[in-house]
Image (cartoon, rainbow, N blue to C red; front, top):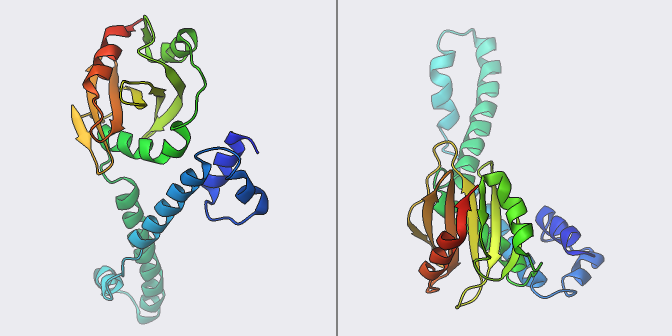
Length: 233
């Protein structure tokens, strides 16, 4: 099973016990850890969604609607509104879970790196300057020289914004560089972090540049190399 097919199946269901999928986890380094991370995210999401609905939520929503309605209509509307209240509550909770920190590109970058760690920690596509600049061209920029060894460069999604995900070398190991077009109300703070990763960001002409690495990993030298080589078209 090739890497793309393995990742597609892992994303769809990391808990599957299909023999082919289980065997494929051992075919390449990092696959088992990648699946383990996805399983952990599933468990966290399941726990987050276990929020009890207040007993009187539907009644409070129904009170104003039903005061002047006939008794038969009232019964029918009570059922409809209760169902709508349950759906609204579930949707609101889902949005709170999935869009936490919405508008903050730093938090999105940290989550993106954590989600891809099992793949990007060992992939090496040996990206050269021409291939990198071909993908950067659609963002209105280019590198005059590679900012280090580039292991991976591909498009990704940042809250619906088509961006570029670059994995590259540093003196202290691999780091991730995101090139994100400036759109909407999205902002990139100069510094951001969680328990595992930290990052720094800078705005350039038309794009945000975000560098993310492990906690304690020096990122300023990486950003300086990126700044020195990156230029608008």
